[in-house]
Length: 259
Image 1 (cartoon, rainbow, N blue to C red):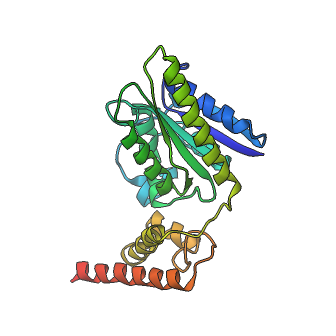
Image 2 (tube, helix red, strand yellow):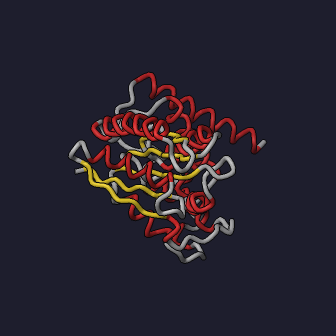
Image 3 (cartoon, rainbow, N blue to C red):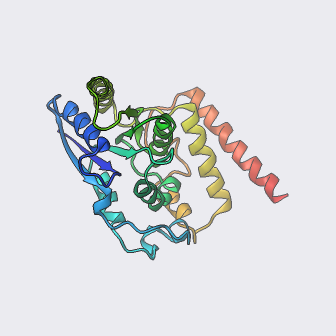
C-alpha cells in the first residue's frame, strides 16, 4: 500500500484546487494499492522566513521560528509520494505555498526525499498556470523527489460541463503516469543533469565549507563527498567519467575564485 499525501495551498475548502486534487487522488485509489490524505496548509501555523540563514549554517533545528514546519516535513518523510496543489495567484503559487517552500529552503541545500514520488496540480481560472507547473516540477526535483510532470487545470466557477470533462480526462492521464512511477524502482540512475548538479555542488561544498557548516557535515555524514550520487545506484563507466569531469570543473572554478 502506497501512502500519498497532498498539500493543498488554498484556503478554500471546496474550491477548484481541492476538487482537482480530490479527483486526482480518487483516480489513484481506484488502482487499489493507494491510501491518500489531503492536508490544507492554511490550517497549519507557518511563519514567514526571516532570511537569517541559521538553517543553512547551523542546522534547521536552530531556526528561531517555532511553527508547524517540522510536522509537515514529517508527513512528507512518512509518505511514499507527495502532491503539491496550488491555485495560480498572480501567475505564481499561492502565498501559503510560497511560505511553505521558503521554510523548506535548507532542503534544497540538503535534499532528503530521495526514493519518493512527487507531482503537482495547479488550478486557475484563465491562463499562466503552465509556468507554475514547471516551477513546482523544478522544486520537486530540488527537494530530491522522483518527479512526475504536473497538471494545470483551467476552469471558471461555476464549472461548465465541458471544463469538467476536460479536467477529468487530464487528471485520469495524470494519475496513470503517477501510478506508473510509483511502480518503478525508487532509486533510478541519475540523468547527466542530475549528476552534474550533485557532483559540482558536493565538490564546491567540500572545498569552500568546513566543520562549522551544517551543509558540510550533512554531506560528510551521508558519505556524499565520496559517493557517485545521493544514493547507491548503477552509474556506468561513461557517467562515472562524466561525474569525475564535473568534480574537476567545480575544483577548477574554486581555484579561479581563489586566485
